[in-house]
Length: 402
Image (cartoon, rainbow, N blue to C red):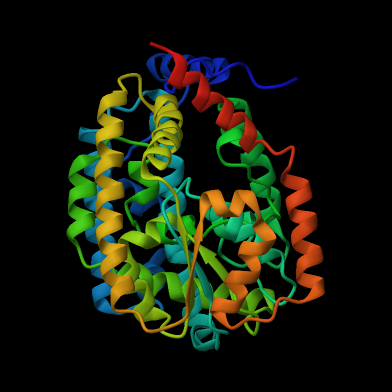
């Protein structure tokens, strides 16, 4: 059975409404405890299994600056979620789950790095970083480049469950959570297709250090967005590098160039490149009006599930600001970049992706092998009937409504 028609950017699926009603009733009746979104409560619960070792788990592998940065970010983000986001019951439950997981992973990584400090010294092949706004073709570029057997990529299960597990529990957890998200949000696959073992961006890794991007796409948190936009993001990208090295060591692919992609990289590009000065860059370009329409649709879809008071004009204003900010910061960073860079335009990629990929490999000084092209053709063939066409149909429908 296909997804219902999405009549409006703020439409919400029936199961999200039912879950919201159930939680509201269950909390009112005392059947379930209401989740506590305060930073202290989250930290206390996440740290409980560590007992007296919680402090060493918090600091493992990290500088005092990075430890303090995370603590301040957590306080401010939790305060904004409580005071500004106007979350409904489902939104509070989802926010609680996300933030508790972040703190738990933070401590688990610190414990791991205390036990295995050599992970943080894992040598990495120079990564290939896809830069550009969300909805500008970055996902297509990412998946094409990741298809090349000479490259490596991050899987969804490792992005959202990044602490290494010998039992493969991350993949199991990812399967369950994606199934649940699909029920709550029937349009999710059309907007951003995901699968446990498939190529995925590293957004969750920077979210794990409390970069604002994933949170402001779901919740109205203007104070935290403003705080984080103007704060030095270096602690976030140092944590990102630690997680990246750990993942590469665990999966045994550190010698292969990793294809990295997060649209929020554009906002912090100079800081990211300071971590990876030998990187190669692929810059995605698209008409900004088309990017804005699609970005607003994505954010509205995420926000509508978690709040009953979403304002579409406010969402559009936020993303106009985000696009302008990222354009300015990206342009400034690229102007100071002396490394390899290739530019790809959304329309040109749609017209002849093989031509554009050949151009990209030439610009980056890479060898485009027959094996790579074969894998890319398979990837493109598999996407021809992909869910992203449904999102295009949604955008067309929205544009025709008065």
